[in-house]
Length: 234
Picture 1: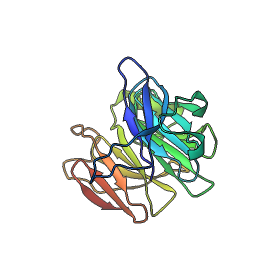
Picture 2: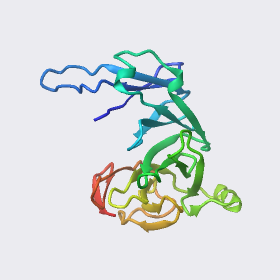
Picture 3: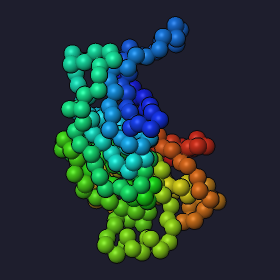
């Protein structure tokens, strides 16, 4: 199992640390030792996700960017390896505000990286490319067009706070919003497939703001939603 730690340095670029594979032994309280540190973001790192079939990790940040990093093989580094700029695979530019969530969806050979941002959009990138190009972008009401972006600016819409891959269907991504609504989208087309049931007091476009985090089962059609843990059938 691979674990990532987020570290923020005052007045310096935020860094991303990959700890040792020897995880903490709770019985002895041995601390994990860092293997690698990736540096490049100019704002706090808010989310990370591994590519499931490649040695690549993606990080999202308050600097409105997503970065792709190469994870070298164990023989290529040791504990406390110095920062290596060559491990940076690229910067994904497209969001205009902080990136809150990342997920990798799709079948083998058709992987897509999905990012959710405080700018109100969900964006889909081609995760089969070393530096993933942008494929799709949608807002709360669906796919963006030249006219829809202007219309959206006239009315505040719920903002995505979290995304996760639906384990039972490789084509779907679950997106949570600040109005506690959770929607399922087809990551290849941006089409809204379903809206999951929510509390009766929510579900409109302008309820009290809330921070919703998602966790999806790896093989079951189940989505967990917080901060109050609720389970939904996907």
